[in-house]
Image (tube, rainbow, N blue to C red; front, side, top):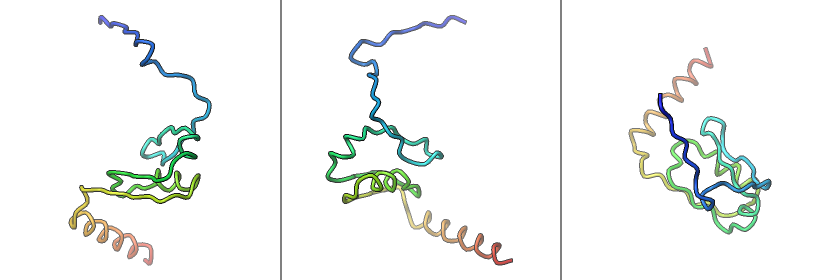
Length: 95
């Protein structure tokens, strides 16, 4: 197998940053965010949260600011399915 190695130009190479923290759930993989960026934020705008808002929750634990979240992919079908699954789990817990 022939594999080629490509070196990124200097301006694309990552720089060492010791000021990063991981935010978000392990299921989502989380995100590395610079602490200074959190501190300097006035608003958190998120798009596409679906049913996992752990990133937003973790972010707001570091700085209490307004959060505006949108997700155009959620539908009545999604919420109905989520409700039915929750009710089924609740019923089995009582048994």
